[in-house]
Image: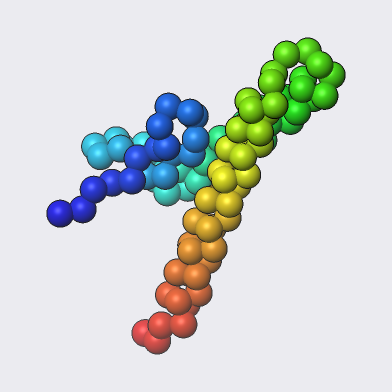
Length: 97
């Protein structure tokens, strides 16, 4: 029995796999587009948090570090997924018909 990988809690991290039964038009491409958008949003949130911390307007150090770590982990996850997709594509292209 296999279990789908779900998104990482309610922290707004990347959705790794679509929920069972959801039928989005575009399939895998739309999932990658959504993931790229989410990585961008997390990066923007981290940048805003750092700017807010440096200007002394509000966010404490812990929230700022968490925002930057969340953005970093999302980017690393996205890069790993991209690497696996490229690796799978290269393997398919090496197959002889």
